[in-house]
Length: 343
Ligand code: AQP
Image 1 (cartoon, helix red, strand yellow):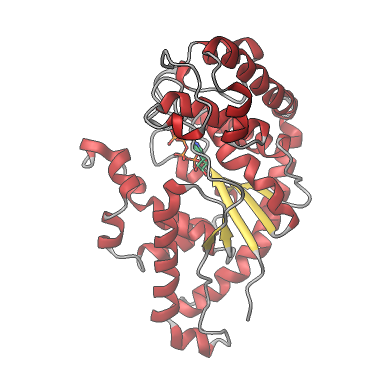
Image 2 (tube, rainbow, N blue to C red; image 1 turned 90 degrees about the horizontal axis):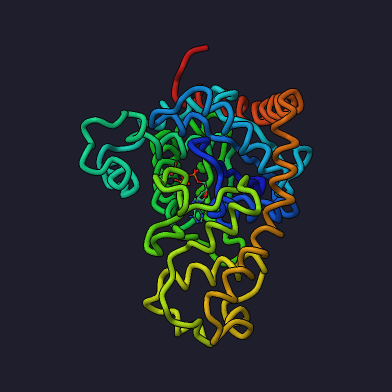
């Protein structure tokens, strides 16, 4: 049986959304609506793997759902919901905790990065996070996920879990009338060039919701003055812009700003340098600020309208959760039978 071409992706409500989330994720979700059944989740259960103030968690949950819609996702075509409304995510993730091996989980570099020196003090949930991510994807038998470079290792783990489940339960899977492959081996979907937006203060660090310095991050809801101020103050070097992409080597901050311009304008880096090569920052930064405002302002205006109407947002999230459950529940019914749970 062929699997339905289906996409799942999610963003954690763990901070204000920023330009990296927009260019690296949200904007890339939109065209997939034309080729796949698309499921876009606000992964609130992932967010609480580190402490979240409950009021902030609620606010950011609405903000992400609003950003999805403001950026062009249509809640009638895409399923938009928050993860905790579909309890099957938690149930499947427990089963996957019993399929995944400690050795696999211990190799996850993102856990090591996030836990740092403090691995004894972080939550058990942070360690088990990739197993919940596998459940998010496989609960819908998603065939593709548009994730960035940083999530590749987690996606491999998702495939390892699917393979081991398909293998360990192959007899039951067949006996219940399924093909041997109960879960698909989900692929990474490339939608345009992979975009890694870096901090405005340090071109070697990614722009992140949890960065301590607000000046390093352009938030999607920043107003025009704030965007201009942050770009004006962005760390650069004294050199003029090069005329060719190779000239950006070893100039991480300059490269980041040029890449942001290229992504916002839908141009190649070479095209941007054709226009600005030889120019100083005094010409380039104001042009970049104007472009960022032109792209982000309409999205932010629509986000503000949507978050200002919690009734509408609740209705969208409830409807999305209902449609998500309609896919997830039959899958979970089969999983329970396959595993041997009595109902
Ligand atoms: N700087 C970035 N450049 C490109 N893409 C990015 N993403 C995040 N930062 C950048 C993409 O956004 C999606 C959502 O990510 P997430 O919220 O699930 O977690 P994250 O990647 O850990 O995002 P943050 O902003 O860095 O959050 P915190 O600080 O809470 O950990 C993903 O597709 C990611 O690739």
